[in-house]
Length: 247
Image 1 (cartoon, rainbow, N blue to C red):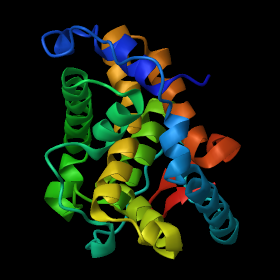
Image 2: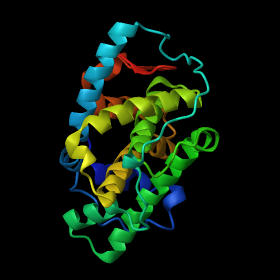
Image 3: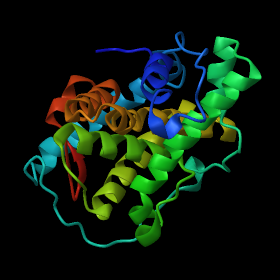
Image 4: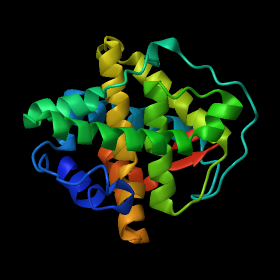
């Protein structure tokens, strides 16, 4: 089910107790969709290429784990690449882009800034172990996409956690695909942050929705939708193992 991005954010988050004192008068609601920015940033196109490459690799290697099970990967240092890093600006480029599209006033822009900030906090909390033990950087587009994929996979399959090394294996796959995309590699630092914030905000929607509804069906269905949005119908066959993503 396709939903408008800000409509979902406003209807679910502005009414949530945790947001009560910050988001009180949602006038920015209804227009911009994830598809607009998603398309502009070519995220779906890159995701389709990623799914195709990983499906080919999976056929070559064979399946290594049963869906929902976590394999233990060897503890190796992650090789993070500077071309995916950015110096995070205080003001969110994603919120600014939404506000410009919406022709929002300063008060509404500040509210959306707070939404993105909240979602960023969810991202840092979820990946705290990877960051602490393995050095996975937060201000990094490949990390943001890894978060989107891993967290959506966990929600879609009602799994509590994966080994941190498995997340790093996904990071390596994501970095390889992004590194091959000439247009992506031309992104300016602000656009890298926008790209990361888009993935982080949409990746955090399932858990933010669940916090409001307390309905686990919301968590699983939105997690599945996130995977399908990125990978297409192939997401039904997705597994995350010590080798990373397999189809």
